Length: 408
Image (cartoon, rainbow, N blue to C red; front, top):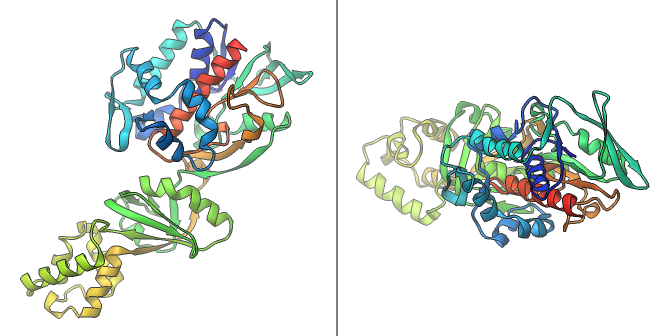
């Protein structure tokens, strides 16, 4: 039995049936892969083509737990799985892997076809209610519609609690807890952040490209890679924000004041910016400061920037004082935003926390408490940056759980 028709559950069902087991897959929705269809903004960033050590470093804290799963089924294995079944893939910047079709349903179609080919029985529109245990071993399960099914191997892949409207509502975690498993508290991961300042609302929809972020709580700080930030009506989002949001959530939970500084020109030092401004000012002394800043910033940001730097919008560059020029440089290298909170876990791409890794055998994904019970996917206490890492973890743990349950 496999409970959960997301990427981890589907791959578990495919692998278990590949090695000769009869498999029943339980899915509470009317379709499989509902959350998968949303991944990568509907394009499905299914994995990342970086090496194993680099891959593991992209996990927030527990990446080493996945070494066995990745040795069994890693990124090249996953890519070959889809390509052998006729789906062409492409590698984009930062080694992110997508289907050439740019459609997540292309991934889902391959998985569904493989389940059908392997004669995996799928029961839709039915949730798990309970698991029958005898002598600390799985004996079967009870469905929400009242049916009971005997089984000696059960793979739970019911997900976390992010994007709850897709069916990820945490019932699998509640059942695991009732069976004696420790649940690491759930919290948002890869989530937008709300800011105290209101100017992001004015800039809603504007994406800043080739910028760098520094998150700090006044004592510790984290600096991002160069990438993108998106202004929203409540604050900020985008790849860099989502990647660093987990640490922000942890700091906020410790009641720390945190803020970010946006380096709008990470390729230039303050000295280089100063030289550039002096050159621009000399060549364009009769122009307004607004016109000069249009060469440095997106058009929509210019007015907000001038307000923040406290310079008259109509001022000519010949009238800009040295102090004002230094304020411009400082703001270009450190646009300040105070973070007041993360958006709700319903808006998070993933939930962090889940089944404690101390209670899962990394070589098999089997519970150390209940024999015959296996875990896979987001319900395990693992989480990573954006870029295909979380989906690969789901496919890899699903594959290992399916094989282990079938062969042990």
